[in-house]
Amino acid sequence: MTFIDLTAAGTGSPNLRGYLAEPEGPGPFPAVLMIHEMFGVNDITVRQADRMAAAGYLTLAVDLFSDGGARRCLVSTMRSLVSGSGKAFTDLAVAQAWLEQSGRSNGKIGVIGFCMGGGFALLIARDGFDAAAVNYGRLPKNPDEALLGACPVVGNFGKADRTLPGAAAKLEAALDRLGIENDIKEFDGAGHAFMDDAEAGPRPLRPLFRVMGIKPDPDAAAEAWQRIEDHFAKHLKA
Image (cartoon, rainbow, N blue to C red):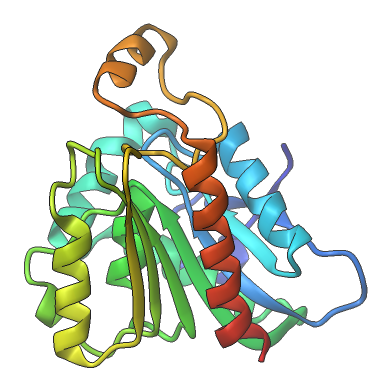
C-alpha cells in the first residue's frame, strides 16, 4: 500500500500519513474521511477505501498510528476516544483539512469509521461533515451532548456483538431525540467487525475472536455497504 504525507496540512502528528484511494476520471469528487479499526490501516482498510473510491468518492484512510504503529499508539488513541479530546482528534482534523484543500473535492465530505473508528466518526460527525457512516462504533458517554448538531448518520451494528449490547437502539434513540436524520440497523446473527472481508488482528488471537463472534459476515456486510453507499449518495452526490 502507498501512503501520502499529511503533515503539510496542519499541526498533527509529526509523521501523519494516510492511504488515498482515488476514483477514475477528472473529478471533482465527493470526499470521504475513513477511520480504521483498532488494528490500524491494514489490507482490509485499503480494500474498504478502494471500494469507496470505486463508488466515486475521494477517500482518505488516515493512519492514527502514524507515529509508532498499534503497539505504541493504540492505548493513547483509545484514551482520546474515551475522553473526546487529544492528539487523535487533531490528526483527524488535519486529514479532513487535507481533503477539503486538495482541489479534488466537490465541497461535500463524509466520514466513515469501523470499530474504534466508528466511535471517532460519531464524535466528529458535527465537525463540518455532510454525512457519517458508523459501523459498530462505541457510543459516547453522553450521546445527547456529544451528538448535538451532528450530520445525518447511517449506522450498522451486529446483534450478536457482545462488545456493544444495545448500542444500535441507544444510538437511534439519541439521534431521534436530537432530531438528527438517521438510519440505524442491527443485523441478526452478525457480530463485531462483521464488515471485514477477512479475519483481522494477531493470528494467535483469531480463534478467541471467533468464539467471541468477531468475524466477517459476508451477507450482512453486503447489505451494510449498500446502505452506506445509498446514504452517501443522497448527501454527498446530490
